[in-house]
Length: 398
Image 1 (cartoon, one colour):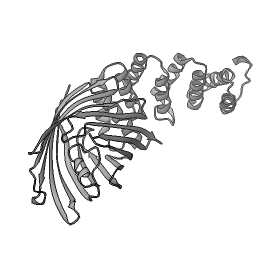
Image 2 (cartoon, helix red, strand yellow; image 1 turned 30 degrees about the horizontal axis):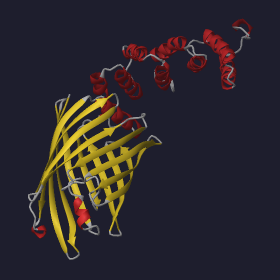
Image 3 (cartoon, helix red, strand yellow; image 1 turned 180 degrees about the vertical axis):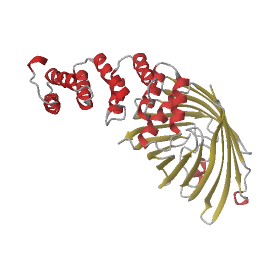
Image 4 (spheres, helix red, strand yellow; image 1 turned 90 degrees about the vertical axis):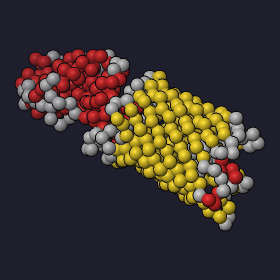
């Protein structure tokens, strides 16, 4: 059937017959009805949208581009048009071509949040991390962004960083009940991104007055997709204050574009024993809030199953690098490398802690963090103690 054979019918009839053919995967026949419909009514946007879908199905991407440019110039607020444009951009196989298409659209109208996110991703694919990060940071400041968009932006921002050097200092003050000197730990680190995956080398040096020790760590965050990434950590020490060997692994999966599920395990190897822990975590973004809960179960020491429960909250300010943070919890997790050795000494201890702080930037390269915490725990069955913990950190991003 050619266009001349299609009888003169009203455009609604042409649209619905074309739609039925499209739904039956008869794309070429449907395309002929949409062509005739647009000859009769060029402003019939639903027919033009249907023609775009037929052209996609027939792999005629370039022809669909012309129709989409018409829609964006004349009907950009018509239902479905912006979403159609985002999908069409993703179908353009060459990232440079897709980026050029978006930039051409941007000359005549403002891009939606979805289009800007896509532009940021395309800039990242084209190795322009600086421009990609500027767009992502600006979008992250939008209070009306939903959880899914914030999650995507977080992943983009992680991938725009190339290198960081930093140092963190922790001071722990013990109340008189402990009868021990205060502890200090300093941790310099270097972070490098290989494409989307971060690798961190860190050295932790701790001084407890009666002894000193160093823990060397290698950490990685491999990214498998926009919805799946992992955390891996391996550490070794001389075994005097830290474990001889510690290893950690977690897998993070985005669920329903709202939640992020974490599951993983931890191993602490001391000269005389191995300790294993399992972890489950759940994270969601709500407006400018990041809300995370984590549960550590294990290790089992002297027939006592150690347990740690955490609530972590962030409130973002003007972008992803500026936020207040709060942690509340019970027990001590195996990720607390400096203080977990206390669990060895008394596995049945009860501990309650809180930590509050601020992460902030000065300019595009300098990131600071200050925080303070309080921990109350059983020292023995009839004696309790207080710990006051201070942290300061600095990172230089380049």
